[in-house]
Image (cartoon, rainbow, N blue to C red; front, side):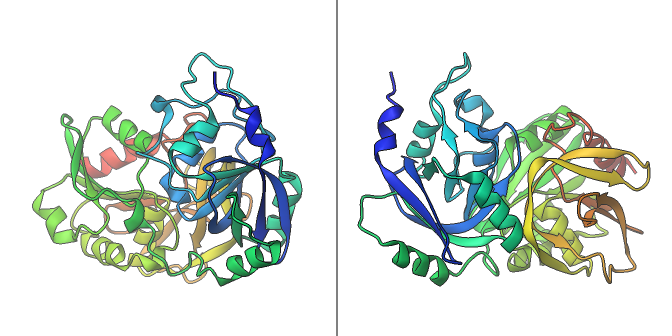
Length: 366
């Protein structure tokens, strides 16, 4: 049986660019890493969180204090691997669940991802809420690195702004996810999650997934009924080829975008996009549908948002975040294009947002 307790003997720490040090013990891969430190308020779903490619380049702090209880398995993976730079938790527990195939520690180790347990995640989360997202250095190796040197390394890191991380997590070759379906959909992979593909397949869509840099001309040659722009990590303004592709596709084929895809469609339509103080990361964000007046409980993972000020005349806001009044959805006033900032394939509501896939079908039918 896996001996999970022995790992507590290996001290570790995470150093923030502002000079703060948070100490704990190492689990997962015994390596050092730089990254952008964020917090996620989800009460469960840690495997889905760590296997979401949108966390590439980031250290994820889980605010739920007890992690690892139900283990990990292959069926619950949201992508082909783990892309986050590290995991920060309060208490690591051994798995005790009939579906568990491996411990969280083992999954991180197999994917080369470091983790720190024993951290005061409540204090860390309050700090991030006050100061905003921080660059950080995670020290989990046996190398002798001082805390001062770790802070210096965190400050020296370039960060995620103006960095194209979508290309790092995207597939490198096209593949067919679902061969049958009434509607032929091309999905641009900026870090797409498996459950998005499952939901589209369940809605009678024939899906071909293409790499992030795929151009509009190549997509249109495939004669799709619709094009889906997926979620993904980092700064949307850095994914210039995707903005150009989206701009060329608008008006030529029905479009749906989520998360990064939402931001790209907005920018392509003339909207501005900026960084949030500490982002939206969790599965309890209330979003109001402005057309119906209904409130959806949504799952979110992003650091950037479209600006409400100076929204182009051709766009209409369709959804509003009730926590901070940021844009959560848009639609084009004259063309078949809409997008949302959140993840309609996730199930925090549990099914509040599934209608968006039906809305995509309606736009293709029209």
